[in-house]
Length: 402
Ligand SMILES: Nc1nc2c(ncn2[C@@H]2O[C@H](COP(=O)(O)OP(=O)(O)OP(=O)(O)O)[C@@H](O)[C@H]2O)c(=O)[nH]1
Ligand SMILES: *[C@@H]1O[C@H](CO)[C@@H](O)[C@H](O)[C@H]1NC(C)=O
Ligand SMILES: *[C@@H]1O[C@H](CO)[C@@H](O)[C@H](O)[C@H]1NC(C)=O
Ligand SMILES: [Mg+2]
Image: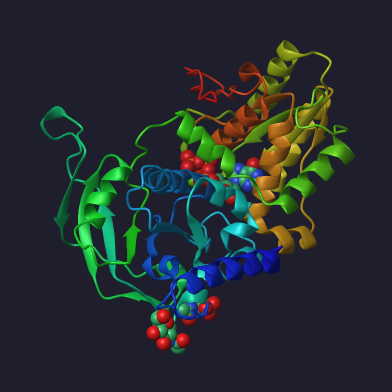
């Protein structure tokens, strides 16, 4: 596939070259109009942010670029996918280094069908010399007072007092120009910053989680979300598990329920949002009985420690359930890494007849979106675990727009 694409690319380039008189070699960067005019937007996210918030940050940038290309503005800009490195939640050794490209988790051709994206290694391949020099890094910061005069308005101003040295852990990516910017509002306002220096070709935004979606939940949002297909190996591994243990061979199963049981920091710091272990089992039981009393199989996706998971399993078993969870082998961990295992959990949750999530977890949100895309009825998707006592807000419903 790759070499076929390369051949097609070569043919196209040669045709262009013949038309423009001089013979143009594919490796000659000073010729071939598309190659030499390419400009790149890089970004990096606040280190403690997790995988699933980063997926949303990606969507903001992908939509920003795709929309610009649609109207023929800034259409020589491409988005560089920031490699995955040392995420806080990824504790397994094989998951920590080196940096993992997006293709490990997602279907790159599908991402490219929505937005002009490239992997960092693709940019490296085109880089002459030993290091990649970024023309300018804008380090975004929040305004001290978001609601100045009582209004939240979109605004930015050049400021000071910031620093940046991350570059995803690569010491061969550098920049001589670091600019601090107080920023608030829509991501498309970043074009205003880019326009300040028209000769820049490599522009980077650090703290890219600060700009917000221009519009959330629109058709464009969902088009972008749908293009974020998982890597085929992850899908196959998840579907094999579902087929083997949960006895279902379609994407909309009718015979098992799934739960995203977020623990760790949630169990420690969000006592008002998440239940105890016993409380979790009770609620799962109650919700499943209300939905379909014939279901007696539950799949649990969780970041809980083994002891807690065993306790939950015991409680549910005593209530009459068959309990499953995906326990990766060492080979699975080496191959898919922590991030891939989490995605396998998400896929298994997304095929279930009924899903119960954890309140305000982005991991849960991504499962809910996946289920909307697959076409599950919304009432089977937007369900949450409540605290043992006290108020329990209904989960927000972000339903798909076609
Ligand atoms: N395998 C697996 N990993 C999980 C599960 N739940 C959480 N994790 C891990 O913990 C991380 C959770 O962090 P995020 O992706 O930021 O999602 P979140 O913490 O639920 O949401 P916010 O902190 O509100 O953004 C995931 O990326 C996984 O690495 C789960 O059910 N299965
Ligand atoms: C690269 O292309 C330019 C413009 O067509 C040409 O002038 C130059 O000689 C080429 N250089 C090489 C190394 O082929
Ligand atoms: C920078 O280093 C990485 C890892 O060692 C390497 O893969 C990449 O090609 C290098 N980039 C450049 C521009 O040489
Ligand atoms: Mg998180």
